[in-house]
Image (cartoon, rainbow, N blue to C red; front, side, top):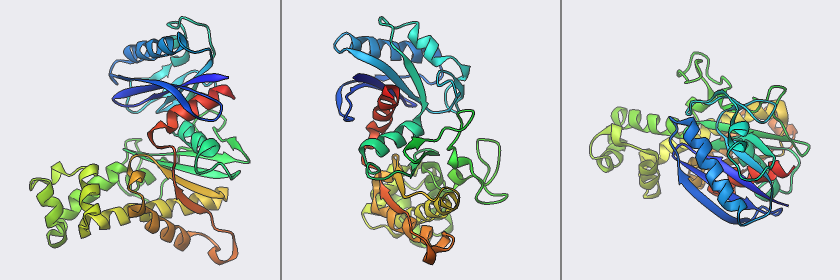
Length: 314
């Protein structure tokens, strides 16, 4: 059965037809306005209608950044889109030309499922996915099943407190993991570092035109790949915090594999080695237990679309 996967991003919506092997047969990308939820409904429906006119579609899965209710039809809350108890599935279905089932899924869950079924996790049964973007999302697979929690808001690992009285988080608390292990954390750390360590930060600051506020994730990546010591150091710090927090999750879940995905993870070895080292240093009873592998995701930017489509098929 062919299904459609929809991945709603902050600036665009990616909609694709996906087969049973996780292959994308066709796709449409459209811009989106995060401040206008109704326009998002219309954009999703228009893309789905266009694809359904060319393919026989059995279901639609929509990956959304936010807390998805256990009914898998309503977005209870989203930090970057004006969704509050928003009936996303119902709204989109009302605009479709064909009557097909619609399933809403948290975007990190969808990406994690894509990696589990078709990517880095296809040989394991128990997996933790960390999506490192602006924030830090997570997906948990136990014994081949996606963990959503009783109320649909499970696996929000980015909001575990790992530093008591630490940095303030947008969720309203302090010391959350994503404040130390995310794209936003990387940028903040680099901006502070070029001021406190001008001896190391000269190249990065010069690349930013002399203004720390101009330092961005892609700029840090570029200078790190060119060998800049400060840029490499802040990536090493990011990897450290990823491994540090992953060890705490592993104490609870005992995952077989930890997969790091999202935009920041595309830097590869800049964070992977430090994440593995910190993970082993923090893992309880390290010398007396099997140690989970930490690997990079394989599905790239299409993971949310592929995972949402496959979960709708389930």
